[in-house]
Length: 194
Image 1 (cartoon, rainbow, N blue to C red):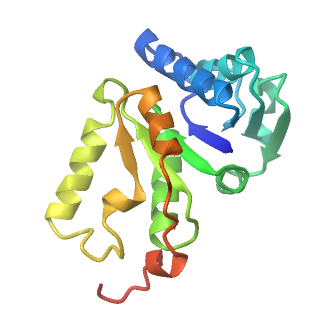
Image 2 (cartoon, helix red, strand yellow):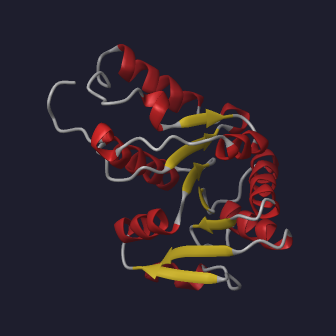
């Protein structure tokens, strides 16, 4: 299975590095391939290196304008012309999407794929690794959107579309659970009242 990790290229606190490394190692040790943003910096470097140290395969998807900071030893490396194309390639190359800590780019990637899943444009499992409760604010915002009626027209409950977990081990537990692919026509939001 190809497991995508959305994460930051920033240098961050050790607790985030430890969780990112652990997740990448677990992915590799379970025989899966890591797909990631292709950078040789920050958490992106950490996940790539950790997966390779555990004898895993890695597929990088960077952008032309970031070529100078691309990870040098990926098994496969792709360079997109735009952020939109980069997300498209990462989605195409992945079976599962895992979002870990990151900034606006990471949140954009996750939110874009969540919205696209809502519209029935893909059927891939979305998991958020909530290290040190990093995504508490995002979860709170989704709860508020739901409570105030902004998610009432979702064809499926938000909980069917994304899973929040607290540890790298829990990510793999979710991935290893049977996955009922929701027929895309049941996901597709048509604009009609649901």
